[in-house]
Amino acid sequence: MNKKDVKPPRVILGKSSNSLKMGIVGFPNVGKSSTFNLLSDLHVKAENYPFCTIDPHMARVPVHDARYNKLCEIFNPKSKVPAHLTIYDIAGLIPNAHKGEGLGNNFLSTIQQVDGIYHMVRAFEDVEIIHTEGDIDPIRDMNVISNELIQKDLEIVGNRITEAEAKIKRNSTEQLKREVETLKKVTELLEKGVWVKDNDWTPVEIEILNGHFLFTAKPVVYLINICNENFLSKKNKWLPKIKEWITTRCPGKMIPFSVDFEQKLKEGTVQGESAIDKIINTGYEELQLIHFFTAGEDEVKCWTIRKGSLAPKAAGTIHTDFEKGFICAEVMSYSDFIEFGGELGVKNAGKYKQNGKLYEVQDGDIIFFKFNPPKK
Image (cartoon, rainbow, N blue to C red; front, side, top):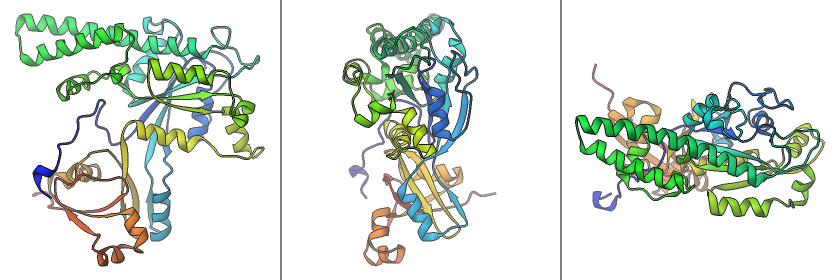
């Protein structure tokens, strides 16, 4: 492959992580902890009163991938390691959480550490489950949550601008000037109610923004919790208004689902298709993460990398020595592996490729890395 034919990897807003951490946010009593229980198969408290979740709960959830399952079936390995999603159940936010009201400061600091946000929205009526604002109004709730994260970012950015400008007076550098310039652009956007993720940024600006872990720079997946009856009939009076709000105010994937239905499905009292795998995989897609595999009789493992990663970077997810001493990546696609009946068939078909440092790893690649071990 010629160097001039390869584009440099695109700089993506958000940290270049090979794992995925998602935080579930929303008002109290909208179904966050119940959804966490369904996702993680754990049983944290899900009581009917505000601030039941005082500390964020965390769980690692295996990610369903049919290709991984098939490879395990074919190789029957001694060790099986699927990809994992780390989920944080973050307690309910309320108006003025950014000022510390409720238990806001504790939870906002946790949200800052995640890669993406599951924004849980309540669109079901239930007189037995109280709402902190009194009535059910998803649009009001979404406005509140969005505004709380915007206000917190304005505070973070304002503090940093003040600090950086003071440093510039003492010792001006181009780096500090660029940072202040970028953060002032952020301030203008946030004051208009626009999230950082929804603006076009240059690679240099993205590098600066990635160092600040802003709330509004994170991708959002909206989980719309509706009642069992609405889920089965696929009708809910709030869904069109919610979709319009998402499109015009803060774009992201929307997944209508029902905690009630999922619980009944788990108990075996109803039949249907669960939305849990879709929720997990949509989080992956929004963060532009893909999977590659290492496969053999000893182990089948599913690895997670950012889309656009080159072969040495992918090798580094296995071990830093693999990246430092990278020689080449021997690659066959999963689809070819299945079509031609295994590695030998792929080689006979001329589809088994040896790729160098400029190879961009594709979703579903099965890879064997060659590397020089470090000198002692």
